[in-house]
Length: 99
Image (cartoon, rainbow, N blue to C red; front, top):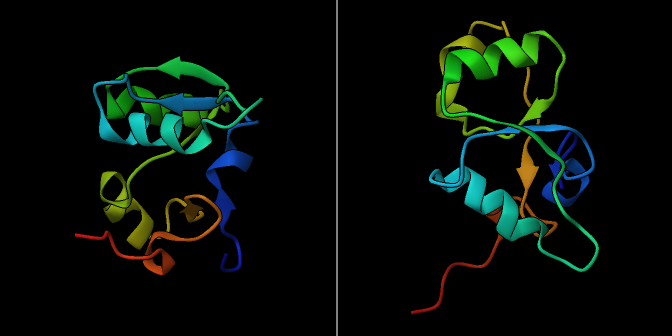
């Protein structure tokens, strides 16, 4: 992984703020961490971006979010982010799906 990247299995050990399971990112986190003995520590489940950001500001957990959810804030330098790598490799380095 690149500098500053974190694997989703590493992220599973911190208190997480995630959307409910109707959202793809939530299902992806659960899928990527399904290994023996690894269960994500989901402390807050909500679908409101405003409420998610409030919990982050309050220090009540860490999110796993898609970049587009906070792109303008990131570009403005208001927030920082770390790349989450799936199965030990960033998405761009994974093998393409086989037909």
